[in-house]
Each structure stands twice: as structure tokens, then as C-alpha cells.
Image 1: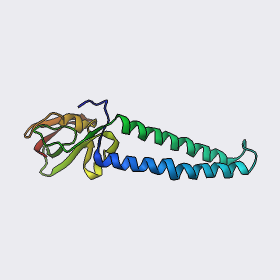
Image 2 (image 1 turned 90 degrees about the horizontal axis):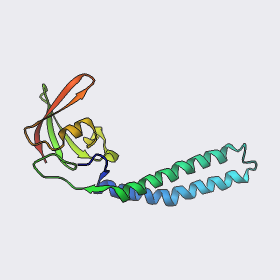
Image 3 (image 1 turned 90 degrees about the vertical axis):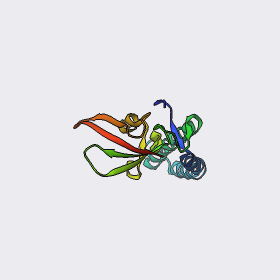
Image 4 (image 1 turned 60 degrees about the horizontal axis):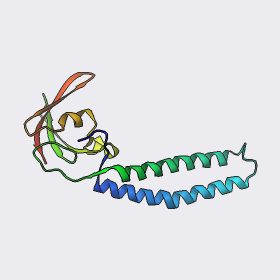
Length: 155
């Protein structure tokens, strides 16, 4: 695992491609129409609608560029079924001192969402888990001290 590379799932790739098409077609058209309307209002130096539309256009183009870059340079991950934790693995862990088990999928930072159990390979827990096997303890430092998670299973 290279922490400098971007990883995305096939599902996320499709989602980004859909968003890109939406931004390049519908959203661009909406912003161009807003710019044309704002220009028709006259003096551009004090035209709040024009400046707002230009700002939105800049943000849109930045997002389009970011998605295109991510799609061109990211590595598509598949579910990982090996004996060691890697990007794409689903890991069941138990925090030391607790009885509850938690399940996490290791994903790239672009689609990390702790609420749905997806953690980034670059997160402290993701880094600690990488390369570990069933039964190993992955530990990392937090402001409250060292925390360990025992790996119950790797799917």
C-alpha cells in the first residue's frame, strides 16, 4: 500500500463518472446561463450576481478537474480476500478492553465514511491495520494514549 496513491472502489468510480457528466453538462449550462443573465444587468464591477456566478464557475471547474484527476490517477480496488489487511479488506476488530466488535472496510481517502464503516487507508487505524493478520493487534497513538484493536477476522 502506498499512502501517496489514491484508491477507489469500482462503485466510487462509477459514482464519480456520473457526477462528472452531471457537472460537465447540466451544471456548466446552469452557470453559463446565470453568467449571461448577470451580464445583461449591466455594470459588471458592482454586479453581485455576476461575481457570484463567476465564483460558482470557478468552484465547478475545480471540482471537475479534481474528479478527472482522481479518475485518471487512482487505483481501482477490489474486495481483498487475503490473509493480511490491505486496501479493499473488510476487517472485524475488537478494541482492547471492550466486548463489542466493529467491522471496517479499508478504502481510499476519497470515499472514507466512518459512519458507514469505511475507513481510509491513510487514517491512523487504517495505517495500523495494514499488513496485519487475524489475531494480530493493531495499535496507534491518540491524544488519550495508545489504543489497540485485535483483528478477529479479515474478509
